[in-house]
Length: 289
Image (cartoon, rainbow, N blue to C red; front, side, top):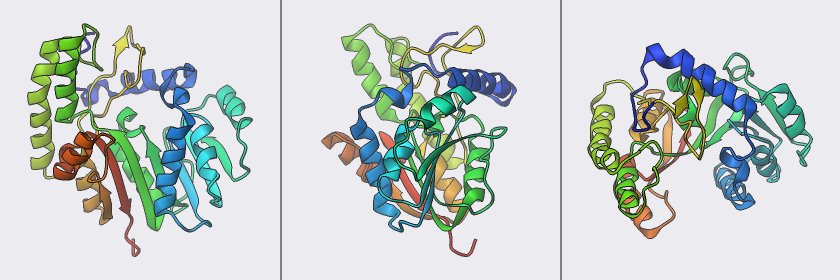
């Protein structure tokens, strides 16, 4: 299939989900967070520790990928840190042997669900995960189910719907002939600027939270992975998260205004958090729920 963004609709869900699960079970060593420097995990764990200050807390890291994220978070002395993912039995055993902190462990999804009871966790975090989930509303509902009243949800993810993705891609194609994410040509990037505005307006004007999905990069029914986020299926438009959590009565503690690395991204995100270059969202579940 071409690698310019193509909308994913409900009739396509199961075939894409099956391809993603097969890919994650095989999990090549160069995939996703596995090749990141340890500093990435340290900064993520530090960010979580900033909000979750009770060391008796039980934390879930959703889509942890390997042992590295939960083990790093556990180093801050929380009671228990659980990493959840589509691990094969082989990978689960392999990764579990790498864990250094006794308060960290790995578990597998059960039929795509979080295998814990209602109100089990004090915090649920995810780093570059929610862009890979097809049934995003159902996943957020499941996170809400297992989170204690007063607990935190901490999301860090790219915003693949953001206008800056496509402006950066335009510059990239002027300098290089190589593809940029799912954009194959300069014109894919150019028209993507207008698509990003359309996506923003779709989510803004929707009465219910609207999650915009795209096909991952696929070939012959399998994920055709070459580089980071070839397997992305959810554009992670920030307003979709904000509307969802407001509908649930959550307190919005952090909403992209402090996200970003460069001076430009920090300035842009502070002014336009609903079109941010990246998502950093922290919410707290109401006490009475």
